[in-house]
Amino acid sequence: MSGDNLRRVATGKTMGDRPDERLTPLGGSDDPRANDTASRDAIPESLLTSVIDDVTAGDLAVDDGMVTQSLDEILLALIALSDDETHGTGLMEELSRLFDAQLSPGTVYPRLHDLEADDTLTVHELVQTKQYSITDTAAAESQIETAAYRHLLIGMFLHASLDAL
Image 1 (spheres, helix red, strand yellow):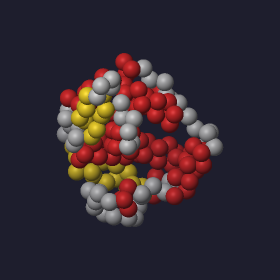
Image 2 (cartoon, rainbow, N blue to C red; image 1 turned 90 degrees about the vertical axis):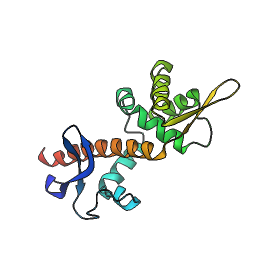
Image 3 (cartoon, rainbow, N blue to C red; image 1 turned 120 degrees about the horizontal axis):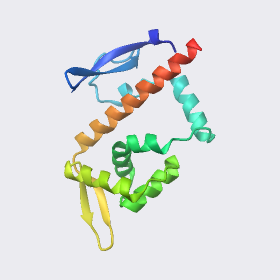
Image 4 (tube, one colour; image 1 turned 45 degrees about the vertical axis):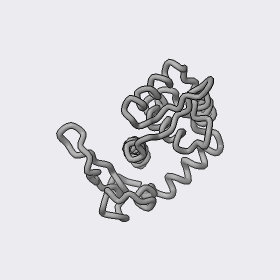
């Protein structure tokens, strides 16, 4: 994929004094605010297939720093996807299983507390543990989607740069 196959689309959100923009493949919906699966699936199939094959084969590993950088969004996604085990220890076990990330409680719990303070999460006090659930689904979805697009932008840029090598 070359850079010519990408277009800049404003997301409608602002970051400082500039509208937030993302690069998307040419074609598809012209409305960047369309909140449907089709707009989220605009990643080139060949790129997705390649990444999925590498992940399945165990050829890709994620650096703990990258996990930490997107920890809030990953925690929100894990909580949204989980039927149970949304306590801190269970979430850290999932981070280890999915990303081989060995994050300390001193890294994970403050992030959970910050998400609770932002009213994105609710904490349910149980006898010996706390369970987390998403309170503000719109905020959680927006935060996850923004992080996903930023990571995809970088990935698509790097993938497109391979043609120049």
